[in-house]
Image 1 (cartoon, rainbow over the protein chains, first blue to last red):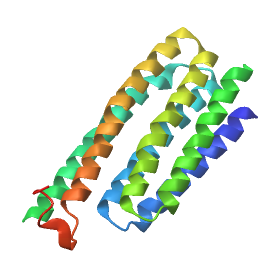
Image 2 (tube, chains in turn green, brown; image 1 turned 30 degrees about the vertical axis):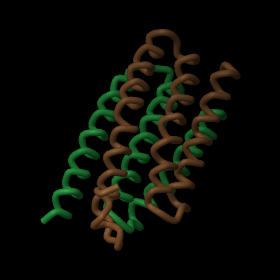
Image 3 (cartoon, one colour; image 1 turned 180 degrees about the vertical axis):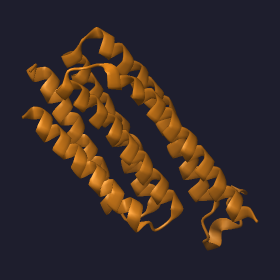
Length: 85
Length: 100
Protein backbone atom coordinates (compact mmCIF):
# COMPACT_ATOMS: atom_id res chain seq x y z
CA UNK A 1 0.00 0.00 0.00
CA UNK A 2 2.79 2.41 0.95
CA UNK A 3 4.67 1.35 -2.19
CA UNK A 4 1.62 2.06 -4.35
CA UNK A 5 1.15 5.55 -2.85
CA UNK A 6 4.85 6.33 -3.31
CA UNK A 7 4.86 5.19 -6.93
CA UNK A 8 1.69 7.22 -7.57
CA UNK A 9 3.32 10.39 -6.21
CA UNK A 10 6.39 9.75 -8.37
CA UNK A 11 4.20 9.23 -11.45
CA UNK A 12 2.52 12.57 -10.74
CA UNK A 13 5.91 14.26 -10.43
CA UNK A 14 7.06 12.77 -13.74
CA UNK A 15 3.80 13.87 -15.39
CA UNK A 16 4.33 17.50 -14.28
CA UNK A 17 7.91 17.42 -15.56
CA UNK A 18 6.85 15.94 -18.91
CA UNK A 19 4.25 18.71 -19.23
CA UNK A 20 7.02 21.29 -18.80
CA UNK A 21 9.16 19.29 -21.25
CA UNK A 22 6.47 19.52 -23.93
CA UNK A 23 5.49 23.13 -23.22
CA UNK A 24 8.96 24.67 -23.35
CA UNK A 25 9.29 27.66 -23.84
CA UNK A 26 13.10 27.58 -24.15
CA UNK A 27 15.53 24.73 -24.73
CA UNK A 28 16.99 25.18 -21.22
CA UNK A 29 13.54 24.56 -19.66
CA UNK A 30 13.28 21.33 -21.64
CA UNK A 31 16.74 20.22 -20.49
CA UNK A 32 16.01 20.75 -16.80
CA UNK A 33 12.64 19.02 -17.23
CA UNK A 34 14.46 15.98 -18.66
CA UNK A 35 16.81 16.02 -15.66
CA UNK A 36 13.85 16.02 -13.28
CA UNK A 37 12.25 13.13 -15.19
CA UNK A 38 15.48 11.14 -14.85
CA UNK A 39 15.83 11.82 -11.10
CA UNK A 40 12.19 10.77 -10.63
CA UNK A 41 12.96 7.62 -12.63
CA UNK A 42 15.88 6.89 -10.29
CA UNK A 43 13.58 7.18 -7.26
CA UNK A 44 11.00 4.95 -8.95
CA UNK A 45 13.63 2.28 -9.71
CA UNK A 46 14.71 2.29 -6.04
CA UNK A 47 11.10 2.01 -4.79
CA UNK A 48 10.39 -0.76 -7.29
CA UNK A 49 13.42 -2.65 -5.95
CA UNK A 50 11.69 -2.65 -2.54
CA UNK A 51 8.45 -3.84 -4.15
CA UNK A 52 10.14 -6.82 -5.81
CA UNK A 53 12.55 -7.38 -2.87
CA UNK A 54 15.73 -7.42 -4.97
CA UNK A 55 18.92 -5.34 -5.02
CA UNK A 56 19.73 -6.04 -8.68
CA UNK A 57 18.27 -2.85 -10.32
CA UNK A 58 20.19 -0.53 -7.98
CA UNK A 59 23.31 -0.79 -10.16
CA UNK A 60 21.46 1.18 -12.87
CA UNK A 61 21.15 4.29 -10.71
CA UNK A 62 24.77 5.47 -10.95
CA UNK A 63 24.79 5.14 -14.75
CA UNK A 64 21.52 7.10 -15.03
CA UNK A 65 22.98 9.94 -12.96
CA UNK A 66 26.18 10.13 -15.02
CA UNK A 67 24.41 9.86 -18.39
CA UNK A 68 21.99 12.65 -17.41
CA UNK A 69 24.97 14.86 -16.51
CA UNK A 70 26.69 14.13 -19.84
CA UNK A 71 23.55 14.98 -21.82
CA UNK A 72 23.07 18.24 -19.92
CA UNK A 73 26.68 19.33 -20.46
CA UNK A 74 26.47 18.60 -24.21
CA UNK A 75 23.18 20.49 -24.60
CA UNK A 76 24.36 23.55 -22.63
CA UNK A 77 27.45 23.68 -24.86
CA UNK A 78 25.07 23.59 -27.83
CA UNK A 79 23.01 26.49 -26.41
CA UNK A 80 26.06 28.68 -25.84
CA UNK A 81 27.76 27.90 -29.17
CA UNK A 82 24.58 28.35 -31.23
CA UNK A 83 24.06 31.79 -29.63
CA UNK A 84 27.55 33.07 -30.41
CA UNK A 85 27.52 32.76 -34.17
CA UNK B 1 7.32 -3.04 6.33
CA UNK B 2 9.44 -0.75 8.48
CA UNK B 3 7.47 2.42 9.38
CA UNK B 4 10.60 4.59 9.33
CA UNK B 5 11.46 3.39 5.82
CA UNK B 6 7.87 4.05 4.68
CA UNK B 7 8.00 7.56 6.10
CA UNK B 8 11.26 8.38 4.32
CA UNK B 9 10.00 6.99 1.00
CA UNK B 10 6.69 8.86 1.23
CA UNK B 11 8.46 12.11 2.17
CA UNK B 12 10.85 11.76 -0.77
CA UNK B 13 8.03 11.09 -3.24
CA UNK B 14 6.02 14.04 -1.89
CA UNK B 15 9.06 16.30 -2.24
CA UNK B 16 9.55 15.08 -5.84
CA UNK B 17 5.92 16.01 -6.56
CA UNK B 18 6.38 19.48 -5.03
CA UNK B 19 9.58 20.04 -7.04
CA UNK B 20 7.83 19.12 -10.28
CA UNK B 21 4.91 21.37 -9.37
CA UNK B 22 7.34 24.27 -8.98
CA UNK B 23 8.94 23.35 -12.30
CA UNK B 24 5.50 23.51 -13.91
CA UNK B 25 4.09 26.62 -12.20
CA UNK B 26 6.90 29.15 -11.76
CA UNK B 27 7.06 32.09 -14.15
CA UNK B 28 10.72 32.61 -15.08
CA UNK B 29 13.44 30.18 -16.14
CA UNK B 30 15.62 31.01 -13.12
CA UNK B 31 12.81 30.22 -10.66
CA UNK B 32 12.13 26.94 -12.44
CA UNK B 33 15.81 25.97 -12.25
CA UNK B 34 15.85 26.68 -8.51
CA UNK B 35 12.84 24.45 -7.91
CA UNK B 36 14.14 21.59 -10.03
CA UNK B 37 17.83 21.74 -9.19
CA UNK B 38 17.59 21.85 -5.42
CA UNK B 39 14.52 19.87 -4.40
CA UNK B 40 14.81 16.90 -6.74
CA UNK B 41 18.22 15.54 -5.53
CA UNK B 42 17.02 15.87 -1.92
CA UNK B 43 13.90 13.89 -2.84
CA UNK B 44 16.13 11.12 -4.20
CA UNK B 45 18.22 11.20 -1.00
CA UNK B 46 15.10 10.70 1.14
CA UNK B 47 13.88 7.82 -1.05
CA UNK B 48 17.37 6.27 -0.95
CA UNK B 49 17.47 6.43 2.87
CA UNK B 50 14.09 4.69 3.05
CA UNK B 51 15.04 2.00 0.53
CA UNK B 52 18.40 1.47 2.27
CA UNK B 53 16.68 0.92 5.62
CA UNK B 54 14.32 -1.56 4.00
CA UNK B 55 16.79 -3.59 1.91
CA UNK B 56 19.87 -3.73 4.14
CA UNK B 57 23.55 -2.85 4.00
CA UNK B 58 24.48 -4.16 0.52
CA UNK B 59 21.72 -2.14 -1.13
CA UNK B 60 22.55 0.81 1.10
CA UNK B 61 26.12 0.96 -0.23
CA UNK B 62 24.88 1.01 -3.84
CA UNK B 63 22.30 3.68 -3.03
CA UNK B 64 24.98 5.73 -1.25
CA UNK B 65 27.21 5.63 -4.34
CA UNK B 66 24.26 6.67 -6.53
CA UNK B 67 23.40 9.51 -4.13
CA UNK B 68 27.01 10.75 -4.19
CA UNK B 69 27.03 10.66 -8.01
CA UNK B 70 23.76 12.63 -8.08
CA UNK B 71 25.02 15.12 -5.48
CA UNK B 72 28.08 15.83 -7.62
CA UNK B 73 26.46 15.92 -11.07
CA UNK B 74 23.05 17.58 -10.67
CA UNK B 75 24.15 20.89 -9.03
CA UNK B 76 26.94 21.32 -11.57
CA UNK B 77 24.62 20.68 -14.51
CA UNK B 78 22.10 23.14 -13.05
CA UNK B 79 24.92 25.66 -12.72
CA UNK B 80 25.86 25.13 -16.38
CA UNK B 81 22.24 25.72 -17.39
CA UNK B 82 22.06 28.92 -15.34
CA UNK B 83 25.25 30.13 -17.02
CA UNK B 84 23.99 29.29 -20.51
CA UNK B 85 20.69 31.10 -19.92
CA UNK B 86 22.49 34.08 -18.41
CA UNK B 87 24.93 34.36 -21.33
CA UNK B 88 22.33 34.01 -24.07
CA UNK B 89 19.60 36.32 -22.77
CA UNK B 90 18.59 39.15 -25.11
CA UNK B 91 17.75 42.23 -23.08
CA UNK B 92 19.18 45.75 -23.18
CA UNK B 93 21.67 45.14 -20.34
CA UNK B 94 23.30 42.28 -22.22
CA UNK B 95 26.07 44.34 -23.78
CA UNK B 96 27.49 45.62 -20.45
CA UNK B 97 27.01 42.51 -18.34
CA UNK B 98 30.75 41.76 -18.30
CA UNK B 99 31.81 45.23 -17.15
CA UNK B 100 30.44 44.93 -13.61
